[in-house]
Length: 476
Ligand SMILES: *[C@@H]1O[C@H](CO)[C@@H](O)[C@H](O)[C@H]1NC(C)=O
Ligand SMILES: *[C@@H]1O[C@H](CO)[C@@H](O)[C@H](O)[C@H]1NC(C)=O
Image (cartoon, rainbow, N blue to C red; front, side, top):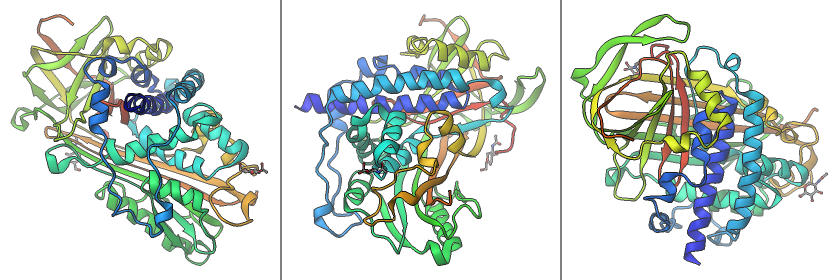
């Protein structure tokens, strides 16, 4: 039984990773994503065992949950079987590949640095699925995790993420992590108890009764302050002015913050300006961190991969950043394309051990990137929630049901990489309103041209951030 439960947790993490890949593809970063989605990754099948995952499971604290009715306390774990989830994964993978083929092209990603959090988007959309019904729900489940039977595994995954993967580890020396969900709903309505049970129990969501009809601007400020607080001030305005109005009835929010120190920090006194080659053939002078310490690194025909682990806490979690550096200076998009078209490619190229280093040079960088995600999600086949035919019948305990739709989905990510480590934050806000309608030799790693990066938790494979750097000097 325990082994089955552990296998299930493992599978849901992969399921989520695949969604990450799907979105990454949409942002021309399919490559990095695909590799991380492979079920039998060396990390997961090798040194990380089922026991590791079991060890990671901690009893969620019940006393601090922000609801009053004991009847709403959910039972863990949910009953989705590993087979259900595997089936969902295969559906989702198919979708991810279709999407990547449709979207991944450099013309969609002009010369700006970008980062986003598949984890934040996935969790917010899973919460949306908990309030959807009929074909709208089916479509969300198809995009997020497979088929009509996937809801349980989706919520089980969210529960695992909220209570375990993204539990703060800073007291024991690991990364500082904040992870929060919230539901802001109009005071004229009552949340459906079934939805509230999932939102509060599994997603640890706060629920706030607010007045959209008379005080939309104040509610917007309230949501923005909540995100600002969770993200330690890194994301100040997830909802732009006017995005919430008197016809809004609900805002679903997810926010996360990550601050990890490198296992081995870079010596700031050795940081020097150097040449970073841009995609157009020109170059800029940018500050590079450098090191001669052994590193997890691997080199192949057209690609080098560097893994920079973050300091671990007392638990079993291990967060790492991966930098995927094409050997040719202008090869960022073809690397992305190659990884997309050969999903197994990167899986075979992940650095498994430390190698002696001649020199490594990594530019410091800051990225801040935000977008309204509904167009992107529509291109992934998720159309119903945004349409007049949306069925969001499960949010509220009343009969105004058919008139709700998703008016917008805002996502923003901020990533800062320096000698100490990484500080990053992401937030997603879904606005729902009324319709009006390996060899042992020294190796260098000189990241002096555009590269991809991924921040993930290695024992589960949950991807927190994906991004690319085309010019480290661009202002965030
Ligand atoms: C909306 O979803 C609910 C729950 O799945 C279902 O009972 C209802 O019939 C659906 N409404 C429409 C118009 O499809
Ligand atoms: C990143 O932003 C911080 C302030 O948040 C600044 O001190 C630092 O110089 C910036 N780094 C780069 C590479 O722009």
